[in-house]
Image 1 (cartoon, rainbow, N blue to C red):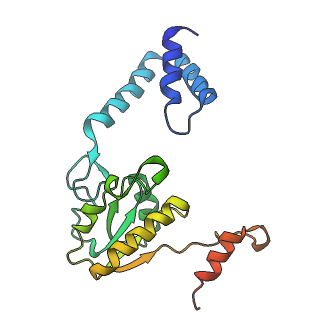
Image 2 (cartoon, rainbow, N blue to C red; image 1 turned 90 degrees about the horizontal axis):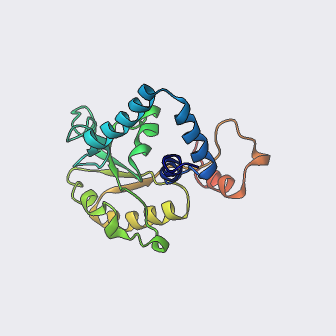
Image 3 (cartoon, one colour; image 1 turned 180 degrees about the horizontal axis):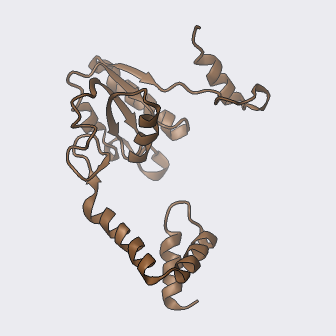
Amino acid sequence: MSDPLARLVGELSRLPGIGPKTATRLAHYLLRVSRAEAAKLSQAILDVKDQLFYCGTCNSITATDPCSICSDPRRDRTRICVVEEPFNIQPIERTGEHDGLYHVLLGVLSPQRGIGPQELSIDSLLQRLDGVEEVILATNPNVEGEATALYLARVLKPRGVTVSRLAFGMPVGADIEFTDEVTLGRSLAGRRQL
């Protein structure tokens, strides 16, 4: 491969979820597009870098500070939903079930990778608790997400707020016989009365 193409493949393969094969396919695709299309892509990348930043209140990605959710007077300021990353907010917003505020941790606890409580935005969450009645922990249901949720619950409960966790269980349309034991167990533990 020529130097510019090898460099492009190298840079693309550094993106999360993009391996060498996908990076090579993307690079060859970019070779075929017009210069104008390539310029649009590169300008979009530069615009994101130049115009977006983390909200000074909740850490979501925004072009204004505070972000549109933090500055919306219609939001319920007694509830904060804690998520791992900024891109976790939109799926929750699409449900229409949460009208409170958010707080983005910018990661999860991971001792293997050297990520402890100090590397997350936990201190800024604790500073936002005045007037907050409930903190909803919406971290992912994996080992690191669970460890982070347990740590946060231990830190938050003594501060007089209700700490809740997203319910986990079977997705709509799933068959019990094909559901793994962990998911089925959580479904049973999180059952509710009808």
